[in-house]
Length: 336
Image (cartoon, rainbow, N blue to C red; front, side, top):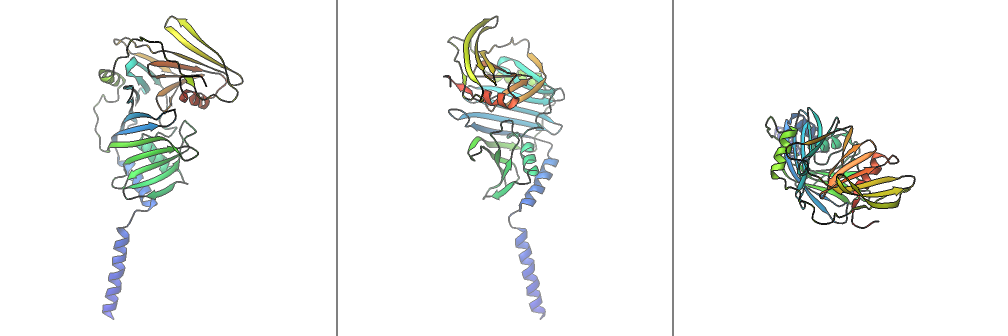
């Protein structure tokens, strides 16, 4: 009888041990994610981002630095054009830097807290923890969460987040449209969850100067500027007039759209500010993620740079989301 009792006890212990060595549940992963984020003092990450929002896929290198005091440095580099932009957050505010033009915009903004950010680890974790309807699965190497999103681009309404099973670091993010097709894909190539930083790593002047050392100088325009058109216009807008306007700053190309949702799009050759002085605008607005670049929303206007050109979109009839949707679609070389 004692022998039987001993075998029963041994069997129960073995079952408990095997259960403890099994796959983690969703609740286990969520608890560990919260602890990991709380204990993390800072990280450095690198990723490749591919956008499917234009005629052809566009690929960008992304580098992220984060320090727990709320300091951020996000560099987006166009692999084909070899030109970059930097989003910087420090005690002085939020900056959008364009080193090739020696220009920056400074905001008093709560970025990145108000929207999802696919390249920020803590933003991905927050999306996972707050979505009560999240879908959890796993493969041999990764935990996978499908969650709702809060991106500025409302066409991006779902995302799949892949986390390494060993340490819960990000592996891949796929941002999906309504048909569950990926419009944005990030593949993380490096992630250092115990990163250290120098005192000036998040200072505006240091980042502008440091990036300029590796940034190619924009060539003098030798050919006629290529004109881009919006491939999306909201219902209630129709093309009215396109013209060239000579100004003190050179030639600008002006496209006017009329109707209930009228707007004006201005494009001109980008100007490089003298290296001896950095041009900084204090913007009463916020940075706008356009995918291929970071725009600047100020009142009824949206500004951005791309492919050696500067764009200015103005409207008193459109809200910020409609303006951003138009800006994201300005890649066509023939009018829609």
